[in-house]
Image (cartoon, rainbow, N blue to C red; front, side, top):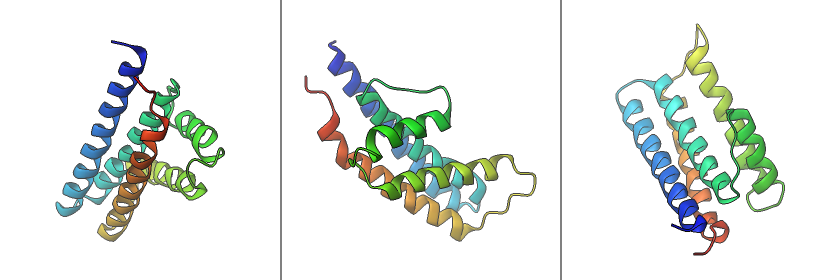
Length: 136
């Protein structure tokens, strides 16, 4: 398998993870579990960020590092709009709050909103991928 094929395979896997996380966010919202839905919505964003970073053979062991690389490589270059960077950071903060705050309160409406925003983010990444994937 060539390096380009390996990258394409990893990107496809990361996007599958993003799609699965979106589906889980919707299911959790419908089940009345908004904090868990926020977690999965954020991970949909995160996995799609990892897919993009894989096209540059970049990665990070920390979520904040991956988001910084995403901003540097894809937002500051104009490949993706600035609002996606803000959306990813906001989702990261919401996920931290939902997962780790002792008194986190997330409504179903908030979970639906972040899930919709995550779907928009993933769709924007999916639209960019053909332009940044290495050719075989």
